[in-house]
Amino acid sequence: MAQYIEPRVLKGFRDFLPPAEIERRLLIEKIEQSFRLFGFVPIDTPALEYAEILLGKGGGETEKQIYRFKDHGERDVALRFDLTVPFARFMAEHRHELPLPFKRYHIAKVWRGENTQRGRYREFTQCDFDIVGTDKSAADFEILLMMKQTLSAIGVQNITIRLNHRGLFNRFLHRFGWLPHSVEILRTVDKLAKIGEAETRDLLANLVGQEGAATILSYIHTEGSYEETLRKLTDMAGGKDSDTERLETLLQFMKDLGIESSFVLDPSITRGLDYYTGVVFETFLNDLPDIGSVCSGGRYDNLVALYSREQLPGVGASIGLDRLLAALEALGKETAPRSFVVVAIACVDERQGGRYQALAQQFRAAGLACEVFPEPKKLSQQFALAEKKGARFMVIPQEGESSYTLRDLSSRENKEHLSVDEMLKLIRQTGSPVMPQNKI
Image (tube, rainbow, N blue to C red):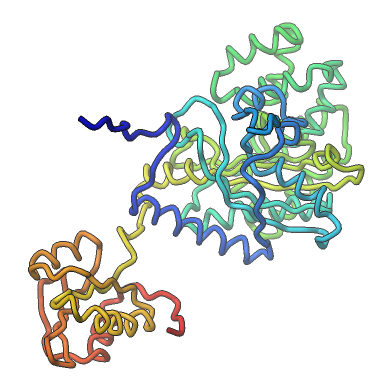
């Protein structure tokens, strides 16, 4: 008896059947369109990098989650855990081939060996967008605006974008003598929403004592408004500086566009990765807050310096596509078709395959996705197959004739003795999806 290998996938990894993959692809198309409207251009980088490239300044939790191994040449390599660190290497390597400020987007898979949960997997897709080569407030605000507009473009409008400034937090820590513990404190605060205030207090107390923990918890508490929170943070950090001025400027830009109600200054937002140095932000769905942030990022002015003597300030964000899709499903916002095909052509005589494809080309030239069936099965079977594939119409060629029967599979109605032009007219009247027309 033959021994078969059990077909299976690793935990945290998935296959995507056509309906799910269509949903993903259409969502990516909308996201890309939004990125392009802001003048961003696409890039790509290898999935596999030297481990030292990826771990140069990640460390901590990153090193525990990364997929790292020796290749056949005994090189220490790893799969990318995000798209930002490879982008820093990319900029150090190609800086003089690119105009600055450089605005890129990158949509690709990344890998992290972390615990799986709803919307969180070990292989997942990120949609990154960054501006490098400028440290101005305008770049920070453009990323924030893109976050809001891109989510709006895919039908997600009831959101709150929470932002903070890592430099301001570090200035607060320096004032109280806690800066040597900044990495541990920032990572602890970043877990506040997951572990709760009591456990956060205990972890902070281990670093700075009970009184210090109470002071930090007071600092990260959000007040009634953006302005009130900023005043408190300014006082606790020792007064105004460039960090508070940056937050004031961003608020003014928000008011200029009338979108300030979508933003909250939240000092508990710190982002767990070490490379952030300035403004940081996370995006939450007000109708589904428990799913966590669906778009996060920040400013990382020193990241490229790991790979180059030249300093290149940058700011960017990343949309977690898989978590966003899980949220859209939970909110009932999935609207993708089961397939792209609109018209199926029945096979009456398999010797007429060339004629059927010639007919299909006329539908495709008109922007209508068309599939030709290759096997001359009973028409009832071909109707059932076309419906399973998501087709709305089936064309039944007539032997020896230049006219056709068009069957509407949704109403089960046939219209006979039609020309191609007549069929195209009837199909268009139903509002069936039309793709951009290509010359065939």
